[in-house]
Image (cartoon, rainbow, N blue to C red; front, top):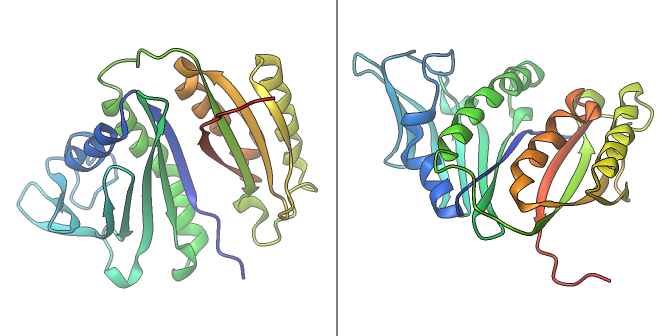
Length: 250
């Protein structure tokens, strides 16, 4: 059986990859919402990367290991096992990548995967799909504290679309009634004047669109492609935003 699609969230923050990576790792205790049902011990404690692990310390000094670091490659990539409140035998994986968007912005991508290892993968995945937007949004808010990046020009993004959890495991995307929201969204991008091209790929249910947007609007459009395409929000499609360093056009 095909693996369940990952939970993926992406944001563009107004800093280079080095600072974006540092805020995610060194300042995790400042942005993680411990008091909002996203911790083991609740409010009053802290969380930090320590000795190759993510460790929560409660207000009474009790500790809980949320996961272990598998790869630490600043400022491009972080890979950790993930099992808050559970043992390591019940772990999934969280990967966070940091890709430069021009000179002064970074696309930060969080991907949570490995659901097929679990006894009830759909339920666990659904819980994290609801929870990660709030948690990752808290990171984006702190990472944006320097203020909007002073950027000019345009940036290009490739939007890679793949089958989402609503059509798993069949990947029958085009026959799903909610797929109609995707071409409607592409028409909206064309009306905005940012759509370069769009169409299906050889993979079953896969496609790609290319957009060219003002650099100052990179964060706005990254959020838009995740929240305004109803085929994506319904889980029929997943989207992954990739920066494209265009060197030559016709």
